[in-house]
Amino acid sequence: MKLEKFIQNGWQMKIYKENDRILEKTVVAIGMFDGVHLGHKALLNEMFLIAKKKKLLPVVYTFSNHPVKETKRKYLTLLSERLFLLKEFGISHVFIAELSREFMRMTPEEFFGREIISKVNASAVVVGENFRFGIGRRGTVETLKGLGKKSGVLIKPVPLISINGVTVSSSLIHSLIENGEVEKANTLLGYPFFVSGKVVKGKGIGRLLGFPTANVSYNNGYKVLPGRGVYVTFAEISGKVYESVTNVGLNPTFENANTVKIETHFLKVNEDLYGKEILLHFLKYIRPEKKFSSKEELIEKIKEDTEISRRYFKEHPLK
Image (cartoon, rainbow, N blue to C red):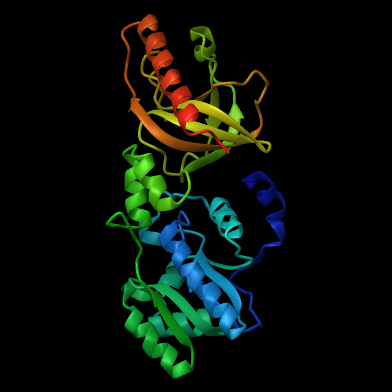
């Protein structure tokens, strides 16, 4: 994954915003697409099928933020990450709307007319079967079908996807990640959950213990993080992949920090990685964070964590 390169130049992805109009006839998939999980990909696949059959431009219509009343809710993927994952899936045209108070006051009819017909020029619309829209979430799929029938616009609802009997949703994945259940979350995402940021220096405690770590500077206010504990991880930095073991927490043995830190120990690295952009992928939960009674006890536990990670990569080598 080349998120850094994507953020820098967009890889020729066409982004439309509030005052833009799309002239070409489109098939549009509507949703937040937070996480771009397997359920979202089913919806996008349906969009591509319709685009090919009817010779329409496939466009994703998404939102830059959660609804105003949910502004404290954190994201599985920041907007840049979400756009990157959409691009990786083959999306080249995205319309981004802001869920402002004014926007949220639109009736279902106003949303359909102003946004989907006037701005996006839709001939077909693809949504999840539980899609709601308009003020107070009054609009349903049935509402959308009625509006589509009047306007000659095809409306295609896509059933929710279940994996091993579990319905895939961003809210469920969010909860799993916060609880440290990254393996279950990854099954629903279709890829390992990741945090993007920059490799920065910490206080050097890990080096003194014999296990040097790099801190990952991340967007503290908006990104959901795995629950506090130790994880098998791997990092992507400057196009290279590095096996690692990561602690997410407050470092209670030595400092009991005020904010959650992400500290990563690379298993096979001697090079200087400080200052570089990083994608840190979470593969497996090892254990909860713990305050140890001595430095020696902590060192022994870190040795165990590191060995668990080495065994994991021996059994599941990175490609």
